[in-house]
Length: 134
Picture 1 (cartoon, helix red, strand yellow):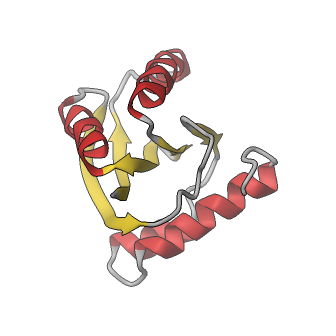
Picture 2 (tube, helix red, strand yellow; picture 1 turned 45 degrees about the vertical axis):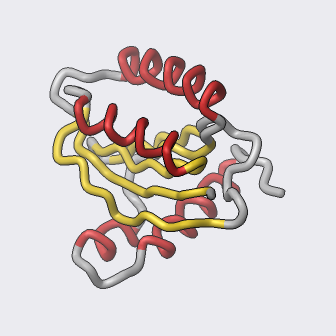
């Protein structure tokens, strides 16, 4: 069964783009091994990430993220079973954006569903020409 998890966390002080690039390179290698796909957005001192894959593999990654000192205040915004991947073929798409999606604030406040955040992230990636959606 496939699972999708959307979470956000605050980037720890002192973690710059060089460290994030190392983190991303390792995550991509591990995701390929575990057959995990997804997208990582960096905005306003936050990570916003979507992970897709087998439930057990996604939970292993989430456990590692919650223990990772580069992440603070990890908050799972949504967890659902899915039939089809949104980021098929991508071990981890990256979008660095100066502002977070409007829907993030709405999801954090409980006004919007995580699917609205996912839709906005997907659209931002499409607009950037980053992800070849199928």
